[in-house]
Length: 287
Image 1 (cartoon, rainbow, N blue to C red):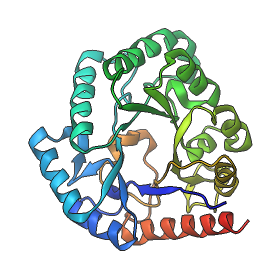
Image 2 (cartoon, helix red, strand yellow; image 1 turned 60 degrees about the vertical axis):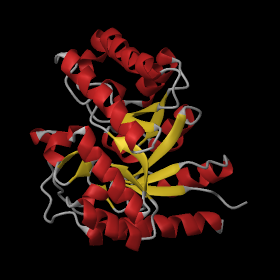
Image 3 (spheres, rainbow, N blue to C red; image 1 turned 45 degrees about the vertical axis):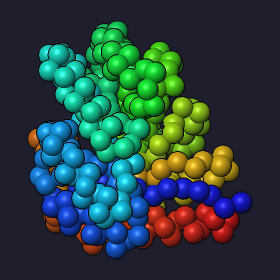
Image 4 (cartoon, helix red, strand yellow; image 1 turned 45 degrees about the horizontal axis):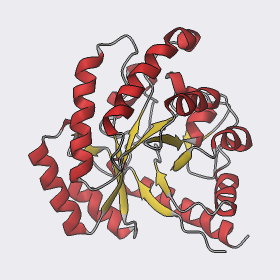
């Protein structure tokens, strides 16, 4: 039984220049990108006219978009929601132009000890997002992330069960679980597998949380891919190497979480991650 995984990736970790991103992705024979940073700013910060030009560049390069890697939900739970909701609606229009049905989002920053206190507000906000896309083919994908409500597999399950919509599913990032001191496989995987429809390929060491080349850490990438093959998963595996510093990292993680990268992320580091993933997939295919 041959698997039908589709490889994508965060091409802004190759270079901030979008044309460089596209040329390097093509050189790796990858047909999709999970679009996040374009020419030095988040995709959601671009105007509609700029996004139309981005789509033309994608079409010319014969590259498709697997998902919008938006920062929606990456604000503090006590921050003003209305401006963020307007950004969300703008992101929906971007999604339509770029011809993808997936938007990655989060469940708001907070102190872990205050998660239960903020649960109702988290669900209220996520339901507003869900209601906006209900009845369309757009699917909102919640990613587990450090220091948000959905940092644990139990709370990710709580979110998707509470929202209860085919327009709201999960992304599984095994390295993020490792960094939260959670067993990514089998525990988190088996708990969430029926609600996960998109996977990030990122690995990390359990003792330090350092992100490493896929397969070299404790995220159990090979075990996860083996189980996905058994389950006949046909969705995306999106490379998010995080092997060096890249433009926009500050905005993603906040100043308190910037690792002291010795080197800048570039095409060679992305290629290293892609080659490692392909090697693991070959091993999985060969049993």
